Amino acid sequence: MDAEYQLYARVIETGSLAAAGRSLNLSPAMVSKRIARLEERLGAKLLHRTTRKLSTTEAGQRFYERVAQILAASREAENLVSGIAGDPNGLLRISAPTSFGRLHVAPHLKPFLDRWPRLQVELELSDAYSDLVAERIDVAIRVAANIEGGLSGHKLAPNRRFLCASPAYLAEHGAPTRLKDLARHRLLAADGQLPWRLQGRPGSKDSGPVSIAGTSILRTNSSEVVRELALAGMGIALRSTWDIGPDLRAGRLRVVLPEHPGAADVNIFAVHPASNYVPAGVVRFIEHLRRLYAPAPYWDADLEQALNTHA
Image 1: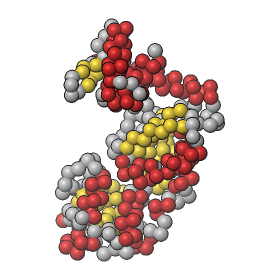
Image 2: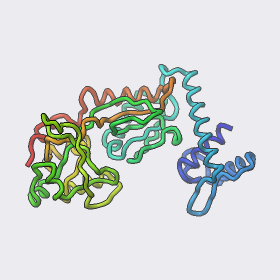
Image 3: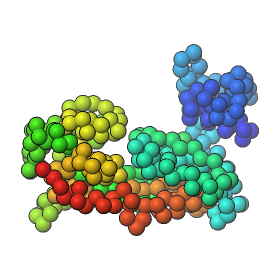
Image 4: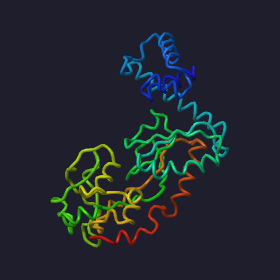
């Protein structure tokens, strides 16, 4: 029964019979046969299937939510028996923002897996927040001010952010000298990133976070596209140093309004479902990242001169 539940959950999470089959080394025909057998045993239709789309019925969605809870409880029970102090083994599912995962997680997986060869890793990159329990994610990287309820958060590093633009843009449009100058500039942001939260002027009564409203001159759901647009001279963007450090050092981007960095309450966290029994793989992975990023993240090394060189 546990195998049927795992197969059904994987079909929902991947969105197709073929993708679920590939992940479990089963043919699409075998997956379809097993799902049909599960529906027959339950006496309920779980999925709507067409040649182009798969979706759950109302009963199928309720069943999936319960199955996800059962599988999570099963994994927790296994962790309780094996203990969190032992060598990690099995599958470790990791979620991370697209750019951060590509730049600062993926390059460091080899030494982690060399150290713990019994682990298997799945790395999901997405700028959308994953539902860790429903999607059976073991640990996720979050760039956030707060950690939502039901999760345990472990701070990995601060997230320093600055307004920046290319030298070509600044030569053509000039550099803003006050926050209100941003109203006449071209702003660049991915969907959901505006309004910007910046620090107020240091030493003033308004030194706390301030909100900068506006509209991006181009709509995109990709944070990486925003960086490329800034490099191309299309406008001003609010970017993290882990993302644009090399561009600042090389002079391809310059900081503007350096006295107004991004709000200081945003940090980089590793999060996992709150539990008394945290899987050993999660514990070791968080330890691995902390060794890499602490006491100060490597991406901020030798960056002060670039941060202080502005128009």
